[in-house]
Every structure is written in structure tokens, then in C-alpha cells.
Image (cartoon, rainbow, N blue to C red):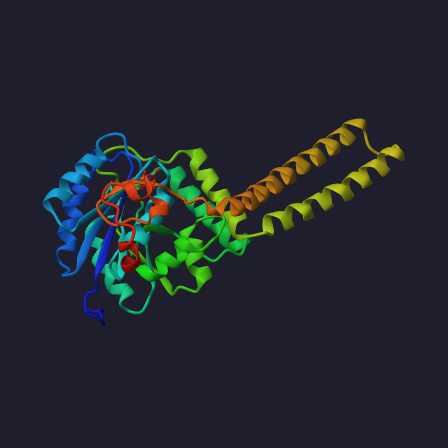
Length: 331
Ligand code: UDP
Ligand code: MG
């Protein structure tokens, strides 16, 4: 840590967990061991509606370790919601996001901290030798490349969810009223100073991954339509080409210069372009509807051992441990 130019900061470790009973104990042990190298630190577990005893395990850690805080969602709201809540309720100046499966080794956090202290708001870890299935690696590369090169969306290439963020900036990102919550694209949009750092990566220590191809695809499409209008522009251009091609084929058919099969194929191609255009327009409409529904909170918290805003607590002021007034001081 020789590059550190500031005193060690206060750090909140956020650990989103969804059915991680196989890993959560080891995650607690390893993360708390690294955090104990800092004077001012806390662990904030966000239980994303687990049904396998993960929450009970977390409560066990909290019972013996006062640095352990937790929030438990009323159902599974997804990783994005889980880390958004983590950033919102983190009480230290800096927040480091971990995975419960320890794929990004907690010992690497010190390098992220040191890099951040050089003057960044966010330092994203980029996994060296990423230990995931080939289609995951290809998927990340493809959708980030399309987003950056073709759609003009600024984001840190290869960024993973292992990252350190200045907590005030993280809250700005999660509070920004965008229809699509997508942290790595929103942080640059707000002007956050960010960089990337290669870090080690390892296979899941236990349990199973929560992503399937459908989720990955939806996530990529969210990025494309949430941060760019270019997909529409491109498709309208393509529709124009199909239209001109159709007219040309029709003229050639009238002159008896092309076969009926060529006419049929041209009609089919034009219909396909129209269908894709319709599907993309529908995605943008969904986006508009989401913006209208933005008043609805992204998650609801069933219980916690820290003060929670009443509007984010399923039982309002009756939520166990909730002291809504204290929120004013926390934020
Ligand atoms: N996770 C979560 N909610 C979900 C899915 C995942 O909080 O709906 C958590 C999960 O428990 C883990 C982290 O997000 O701590 C990363 O999940 P996973 O290992 O499945 O993702 P991958 O490493 O395959 O990208
Ligand atoms: Mg994982």
C-alpha cells in the first residue's frame, strides 16, 4: 500500500447474498479478516430474499460481531437492488462491494483502496484470468464492446462488481432516477472519476451461480436501450434500406427481370426487419413505462439491524429494528 496518500479511510464492505448458505460463513471469515486491518470498518450483508438459511447465518455473525450489519429484503429483488440498498445504507465514507462466493478474493481489496486513494471516486476490479464459463466471458466482452463501440455508451471495459466506491458518489448513482439501474454506465455519466485495476479471480468456493442466459441477455438489452437511442436510429436506417430494396425488387419484377422466389425472399426480409424494429420500439416503450413507475421503490426491506427509511421498509415503522427518525442522521 505504498501509494496511499491519505490515511486509511472508513470502509463499509457490502456483501449481497442470495441463497449463499454454502459460502456465507467463509465469506464472513475472510472479509472480516481483511477488514480488521482498518480501524473504522463495518460489514453490511444484504440478504436478497434468501430461503436457505442465509439470513439466519448472518444473524449469527451479527450476534457476536458488532461490526456486522444486515438488511433483509422481503423477496428476491436481484443483485442490482441488493447492492443499491448496500450503497444507500453504508455508513462509512468508502464502500467496497464483495461477492459472497469469494470469486474476487477479499485480500485484493487493499489494492483497490490504495488505488482509490490516488484520487478516484470509483475503482473497478477487472478480473485477470476470469474463472467463469466461456459463454459468460464472451457475453461480457460482446455486450460491453457493442455498448462502447457501436452505441457510444461510456463504461469501464471489463469492470466487475468487485469495486470500491466513494459512498456519497455511490448514493448519487443509485438515486439517479434513470429507468435502467446500471451502475457501470451511470457512474461515468455523473462525472465520477473512475479507473480499473486488474485483480485475481477464482472459481466459486461453493454453491451455484445465479445467472442464466435469459438474465444475461435481458441485462445487456437494458444497457443498450437504457443508455442509448442508437439502436433505434440504426434500425430505422436498416428499414430505409429494406424499403429501397423492396421498391427496386418490385420494379425489377414488373420488368420481368427477377424470379418470383426473389420477390418472396425480399418480402420476407422486409417483414423480418419490421419485426425487429417493432421489438426494439417495444423495449423503449417499456422504458417509458418504467420511468412512470419510478415512484415505486426498487426493493422492500423486511428486517434489518440498522435504521431503515420507512418507505423502503415493507412494514413501515413497524419493521423490526426500524427507527425511521434516525435515518435523517444516518444519511
Ligand atoms: N446475488 C444477489 N441476488 C441475486 C443474484 C445474486 O444478491 O438475485 C448475489 C450472490 O449471492 C453473490 C453475488 O450476487 O454474492 C454474485 O452472484 P453470482 O456469483 O451468482 O454471480 P456471478 O459471479 O456468476 O456473476
Ligand atoms: Mg460468482
